[in-house]
Amino acid sequence: MSELLIRGRVLTFVREPEGIDDTASYRFFEDGAVLVRNGKVAGVGAHADVAKQAGDGVNVADHRPHLVMPGLIDTHLHFPQTQAIASYGAQLLEWLNTYIFVEEQKFKAPEHAAFIAGRFMDELLANGTTTAVAYCSVHPESVNAFFTAAEARNMLMVGGKVMMDRNAPAALRDTPQTGYDETKRLIDKWHRRGRAHYAISPRFAITSTPEQMEMSRALVAEHPDCYVQTHLSENKDEIAFATSLYPAAKDYTDIYARYDLLGRRTLLGHCIYLSDREISVLAETGAVAVFCPTSNLFLGSGLFDRDRFDRLGARYSVATDVGAGTSFSMLETMDEAYKVLHLQGQRLSPLNSFYMMTLGNARALELEHSIGSLHVGADADIVVLDSRAKPAMDLRMQVASSLTEELFILQTMGDDRSVAEVYVAGKPMKHGARKTPVTAPSTRMFETA
Image (cartoon, rainbow, N blue to C red):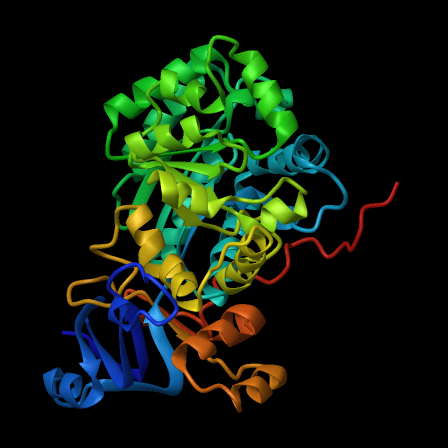
């Protein structure tokens, strides 16, 4: 029997905070511990109590005075865009055609897909993210590389091949039938193999014909426990283009509704320009809007109106959206989320930020039984955060007087340097765990004419 006692200042949420002083929304142990047994949480609480549950000679990882929390969760990003982060000067549709569709063509090559998949997983872990929901490219090779890299690290990951049969380069297009057949084979191979979960992924209405949307509907009906991921109302030009392609639909959201793609396991990236009617449809179906603040700012797309989703009872999560998002860090993402909401007169408390990164996103995925909080029986995916990781943070922390103030410092000033350690199913991953080389096999700096 494998046991590990992780000691530190333990913080885990039990429900969504109702305000900045809602101490009933979380459990906090100033001198706390998490007992890990065979990759699961076997005990959590005050160190003196949890230590009694441990066997003689248990290994101890003492992380005091750092915060010990559930691993962070990212609900929307694109693994083939890892090397396209920081692509200059374009909004969504131009950015896709100029940079992204060029980059994604490389993922037909298994060697390239495997290299980027390894780096992608390592970057997530370096930033404290232990679970993510990702789009692969149209190529089955990219999906195999994605799940192989996740399996090597024992990470709980959600992903799938994008389906695109129009308005993309020929090298990135499938057909309704090949998209269906390849997706079905990949589901059979990967879904619920170990910790893997498959996401049926019609990229968005612009790149799928009605025939492909029908095939997506069939896949969802045949595999109701798979996730569905796509994009919705990110950019005004995108909305106009999508609705012109489906003139019978009431609006953009209705396109997906007509093909029965909206449900509690549906993740809809962005959702910036939705009408009240559209948000109400999401509320009725249980579909999840995914707030991607860094991406929305980088591409100049717009501002997510969280309070309207709350008022109309719709679900939402938060995500980095790499590579339009400019960082793998959920801390930096929540810093931008705070600003996006602040611009609209909406407040995001530090408690709500850390709830969203953990239990909130787990609930959006309906995986709160296994990830997102530290409770007995949960998977031991854990992040250790150092709120004094940078000199400026240390200086600021010298006058901090509460847990919520510390959390806000981490959110506002933190990044990958604040991640002291990461555990995946109880195994330490931050130090000495990089599985892939830092650079690709080629040593050439730039391609020249």
